[in-house]
Length: 380
Image (cartoon, rainbow, N blue to C red; front, side, top):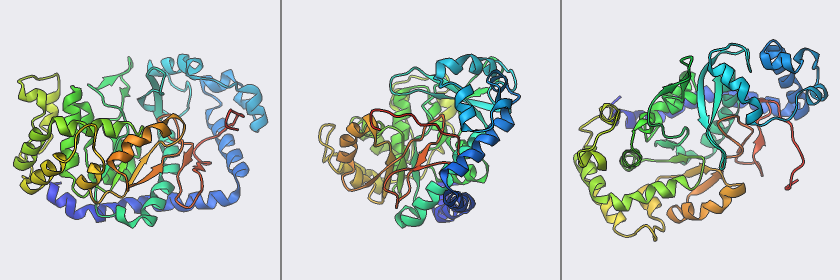
């Protein structure tokens, strides 16, 4: 789909996406009325029933577990290191290790202080994410009408220099960030992305940042930004000042020449990937002039409100706002002082635990997405 056609069809694509979210959103409302205990009991019984014959299930005697009390008694609290031997066996191609559902991919994940981990992904895990994402997106787009009519910038999976597989040939990492959703949702969301998923495969970090910024600048109708860590966006946007002339020139002529390629450097898959960028794209001389004018009004240490000037239609930024992340919001708010920032809830590569709902005072438990145990902590 060409750029002009994609822009024309954006409202229709958004409506089509919301139609795929509707049933999940209504199901979430019905389930919430049943009560958390009832829902969680049903989820646990389903997990036990479907996975009792796995290596993990046999080790912990799933066939003897009938309720949450039995689960607590037989399945100890574990961290990733405890589960790593099972993950390694699954990555080597062994079936039914952690789940009876076939693993179609492993995704990389890392916490704020922990090294990278491989998370096995199955269809049922993706379905559990959709059980939370569908009501979240339906709530967002039905209440914030200014999100309609423009693109979204989704920062989901980490940048990857190349495509890798496990020893048994199972892919590591989604080729397409919209693949988190699967089905028709994936097809619709892929067309709505301001920055296409293939950009993350650029082999040089400067090229990754440059091409991301160029696509964002071309998305004058940007309405939504969704990212994990609030520090990511300010660090990315700081590069606008360093590359203002190159970006302005590429906007003006509809081209794409990352800094390293300008210097005659090339990397393993860079040129192959950049061929996917429709060159020449539509020249945007007016946008280029506007960008340079706005960019000349600030610098790395003073960027107050520049993000809102560059993307005046931006309606909402979804990011982590709790824990350590709350101390990182200052720089984000400097770029976007008046844009609504919605806390993302507890959402990670491993699972979806809570989702933000506009009328709720706090993120709501995604009770049908998994079985949850809670332990008293410092915050209660």
